[in-house]
Image (cartoon, rainbow, N blue to C red):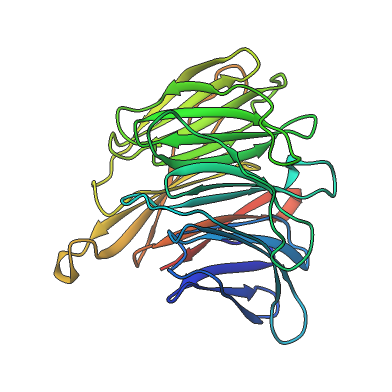
Length: 329
């Protein structure tokens, strides 16, 4: 995960390395018993941000990270432990800093051991105890994908995808993670939902969202128009993915530039069934208006396999926005 100032990635033994991109100072975050499988970082390029991690060990951890001196400083704000196991699916975590009032704590949405839940992150204090989580289930199936985005009136939209192919959308209000509306439930794919992302439609009313769902088993991305107030969801576009079934497809949405990024890889059988020789990165602009659609793609290649990547928006020439990709190869 990365923003304008910091980049972070998992290393063995449950440790997360943080790099100050301006000074190259380093920091280490500890607390997980397994290697982190998902990271989320608040945006911006300031001297301070929040970083959250999960590691398939039943824990969700959130730190405040600060620049300063010869090393990156950190303070643990949230530590949540959930008992039980859910083999075959990775935990997920998302920070939504605009979910509360200005200056208030962000919402923390996480999938731990197949169950989705929501908290407020404490604003300070070493490993402050969280309030009770609010469940964000998606029927009886295990939760496997997660997304969150700010909404009006201090609320947040949280999307949960299930192994069954179903999706649940909720409007959530900060303050103990209270869920303020009944979920909008619909079936997105014939197989598991392997990725989710939320966008605000141009000129849409409160509660309306564009939702991207990735169905890796079906090799497709669907663009949905969902209205939580009206309780409706309609599929606007289907994007078929021309990529080999393995290694896994990587996907991310950069909301400010409305760009969908897909990374597919070529296998290297000489070094193992999941070894990656090179990767192709495909970028799709998502048009707005009354009929949102995927623009023709742009493609470029990475000479080595991409293990994970994070899109970062930076100021470009003539007040434009540049989209940078930070890749772990």
